[in-house]
Amino acid sequence: MAAAKKIPPAPTWDLDSIFPGGAESAEFKAHRDKVKNWLKEADEDLKNLPRKLDDSSINVWSGFVLKLQDAIEGTTLIISFASMLVSQDVKDTKAAAIESEGLQCLSEWQQIKTKFDALSLEQSDEVWEKFVTSDNIRGIRFFLDEDRNLMKKKMPMEQESLALELAVNGYHAWNQLYEKMSGDLRVQFEEDGKTEEMSLGQLATKMGSSDRAARKQAFEKMVEAWKTREDLAAMTLNAQAGFRLSVYKGRGWDSPLFEPLQQARLSQATLDAMWSVIARETKQLVPYVEAKKKLLGIDKFCWYDEFAPCGKADRLYPYDEAADFIVKHVGGFSKEMGDFSRMAIDKRWIEAEDRAGKRGGGYCSGTGHFRQSRIFMTYAGSFENLLTLAHELGHAYHSFVLKNRPFFATEYPMTLAETASIFNETLVNDAAMAECTDPQEKLMLLDQKLQQAYVMFCDIHTRYIFDSNFYPERKKGVVSKERLNEMMIEAQKKAYGPLLDESGYHPLFWASKLHFFITDSPFYNYPYTFGFLFAGGVYDRATKEGPAFAEKYRAMLADTGSMTTEEVALKHLGVDLTKEDFWVDAVNRAMIDVKDFVKLAESV
Image 1 (cartoon, rainbow, N blue to C red):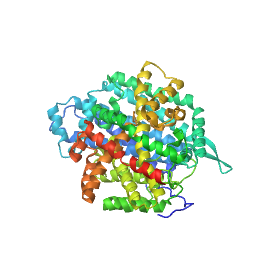
Image 2 (image 1 turned 180 degrees about the horizontal axis):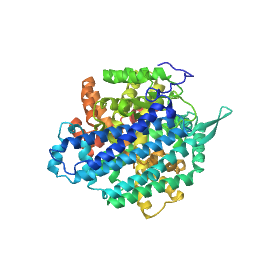
Image 3 (image 1 turned 60 degrees about the vertical axis):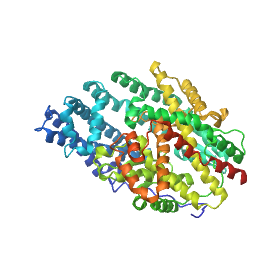
Image 4 (image 1 turned 90 degrees about the vertical axis):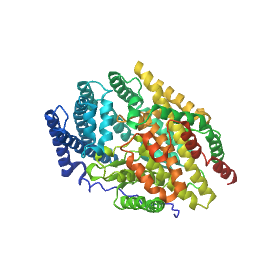
């Protein structure tokens, strides 16, 4: 790919093929009305559902469950489409209101589902087995069994329904408030003698600048912005955690990790094994950081130096060239993956334009019964942006593999959600490395790979430690913003160890990171590190077996909506995730480039 000092604007996505007209779309309004009618019908059907499941009622029960499945697929489309509209324009208040409307539908659906789950507990295990193995239902058996078993560990149905109803205007509203607060923040950034207003999403790209003064300014401006919202962020974090803990108390869940582990379909033993190995082996990154400090000409490695580029970092990758590069190399492993990526790019499933008014970050979202994906990101031409594009296309391919499955069988846990995305990212990074002949560019590519390990083992570990320490304190009462800052520094000291200088900590990281405020997914952190290491294990198999592994890889992704995380690993990789062996190998594999980086850094 040729270098360029300026690149053409990246494209915007096509949302009109889903619902033309955005928040004002008549088709979108019709869809929302249809979902509301489905929910009313489902509520009535549930009242008339035979209390006893037997041969005479099994077809009626099956019909109800399938209608319930249609209703939630339609509800998720309301939420995802409205969220996409807000992502592309944080000032789209109509879309934000529709997102709240969708969350209300979700609450109603959850209440109906809770009542159904309670009814399912009244049935014998024998007749339930007959039901979930019936022709219309067996494809979603895992989902139904999982919910029935979880219902046994919840509050009585009336209390669960009330908690769900209260969550709409209480619990989840805190998440929406945070997103609005974050999206509205603006800073004045000075560069090349000019002052420009930037959103936090745009500011984040400056953290990867080769100019340390620019990085430092970006960090300080971001901290300065969050200082003005520190009180509100602390209030928000405490409020949503308090709600969560009150519900857990009612359910008798002693650990705040019970829910996230259920959502991840993961055992505590697996999580403990992973973090134990990481805590022990993070020191392998010390030579990498020391070499990077020398390259950057600094004696202290601060938060704003983490993404400082090394090597030939001024190269920009036009969007079209980046897209072609990704298609070529994922297609070299799997023709289907390459063809899919080409199609997603050509059909403009990707919102990539670099402009003000967008939310920060990136994600891949589903589109309900359309069974398509939409990718949101800001593409500014860096190699990191190229990897983000590959990453999100991996998510989209994962959904594509599951597109013909019943909706209840397409819901995979966060732990496995990162498999396809990080697999894509690693494949593309290694392809760039293999084609590289310039030592400076190779240094940059090695740095990108090691930055990822650094983030997964330090940044994400910090978040996990912070959450783990925050909840016990929150149980005792509201945690002040000062204490939140202290806890964050304590977590960074533990996770980073000698890698980060004490003058370079980020005490307001808890406020600036969206992931702490996502109410749907508590402990929205460890799945990233898990996915990084698990995907590394999958990628290792792919490199050893070559394109012949593509079908096995596809089959593994297809099972992610119908198995626990440990079951997927055992069936498709033959490994026991509760043992440290897999994690030791995975961590060592992630560190394998440290020596090459240090050696190359000394020679350039």
